[in-house]
Image 1 (cartoon, rainbow, N blue to C red):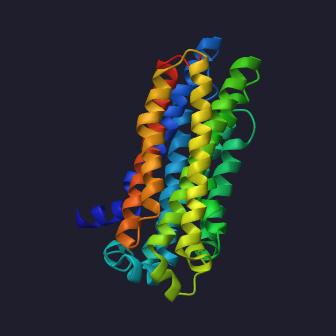
Image 2: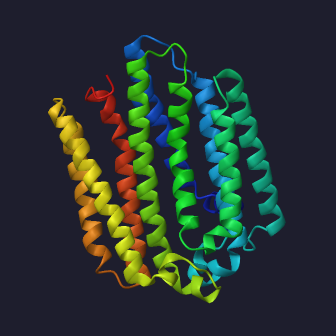
Image 3: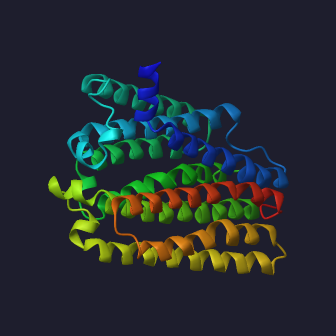
Length: 312
């Protein structure tokens, strides 16, 4: 049981649940209601969706393993209580799991590609595997590049579903446009919120990163500069959400705007304020956890897209 618990912590199982929940809600609360309204069958049947979701979960799990593999020395400084490789699992075993998970992910994506138009699924999974490897091996220690890459990989879990579903030849123009629009909005939200969180996490880990010669944003620009960078993206995200609210209210939708105001925009304003009050690793850890809750609220908002009639 101890080895199973160790393995689950190594692959960050709550984050994997986040990924699958995101894809599940986007497929079943956004894409399928639009397809049903148009009277067509979605490109992804249940088996195809489950395999694509499994592929992304496996890619993410493998990404956490390779990240810990390369960051072993740094993590012993930044978060010694969260070092799992060499403390119950050898480096060789960890690498074997990394390889097997990526092979399984590619196999799942290949199967999906055989039953849907285009090569979006297999191509996206392949790019994510390569990107996460180079992130862990070198880009994580470089200025901004690693942050942008992880945010893009996170956002791709939504993008790939929109890409696959909107490519169905029989899908009428308006439903296809609706899927593309909602894909763009949720992909953009996932990218920006993930980028903010990655920068804040670097602020939390700045001391350990500095000892090992990393060139992350807080080391290059300092804590103040990094705070301003994160704050700028928070402001941009709030403005886009307010614009989206105005559009929804103009079209007679009020439930989703109320949800966004209470559970996304107001928490972002609080995080914005606390960002300039933070001064310790513990403060930045709390901010990172707060951003994660906002991410969850964003994911759960997909439930209201169908319920409130936005997807019609």
